[in-house]
Length: 493
Image (cartoon, rainbow, N blue to C red):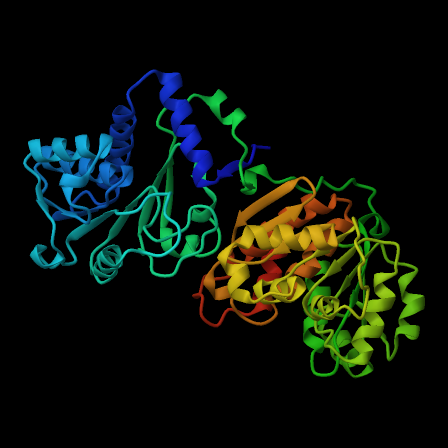
């Protein structure tokens, strides 16, 4: 099993830069030139036949990288022009030296967007406006430059990070939309969560020869898990039997929402759980038995009727299609007192946020799976605040309720007592009803098969997203949650 990738804040990467320069005993301009060369190599590998290049340079070291890239392009006889968003006369330090290098190589440097020729489809835009230090409001001239880049019909290559994207949180208002981003020294969290996955395109990491020991002294914000770094389920013994693999109880399906609870039950079954029970409204019983006869479906009209069903399961998943009625609150209250691990999703989270049920309860043995809106309700804030810093929101929910928190998104964050994990898995086609219900069932099934909660959460998020990726053979639009079920089964082993 490979180790996960550390994801850093902008300040931590600056520290890694400083330590790399000291350890390698090189001037900082040399590290800048290494970064620019690494970027140029990847640029040329991706767009070998590009006709011309326009480089948009800011006033800091990110702009310095851009000037060096322009110089390298000129050396290769590629037509190249620089737009300087900051007057070159105001540049200092390495950025000024990089500008001088570009000028020596014959690069034309313009200081007005009106002087810059219109880009066509054969023009590559290099975005070197803002680096990882950006935060707050964009200057008007920078905003105009970003708008110009966004209108370009050709490909866009971002140096270290798309300009306008927060390296720490992945938040962005106006930002560059890149086809490729090459990032240096340390992977920035913002590239992989929030708006990052939508803005970065393909992300390439270049360590620039940074010595391995420097990474031990700098604390990351999160750890990024890929398939090779996930704990998997062990092979089953030849004499296995169903009770060895968990009895899962799915609680949900208020009037009109029976499908959500049934999909959670189906995904639990396809994830390898030994036994599945379903507690739902009586009117959903026939549909449940018809759709999935392997599920033991029970009609429940009150919390009291749920009580006997709580004695057998190893894991309870509550929330899919639960609704927010008195019936819903009764079922959550009873399920929440059970002494087995819980997976809490959907309207169970919304009821929890109101505070009438399980008020003040903190549990080490539950997994909460909110999307952004549910996280906002749990924290008593608005969705914009969650989107502004998803990692901080995930941590805040975990600190408030304990256990493990899965904050769902393009870069799903998993907060737990030991830190924060990130998994990029899935695609925009999964923005449809029922997808979260599947994830709830997968998490419950993996816990039932004896994975620790954190490992179950990590593997479930990856399985869910990868099943979504495999199910897009016929395209992303029109993808249904149930299309993922066969793929979940294939991927779980």
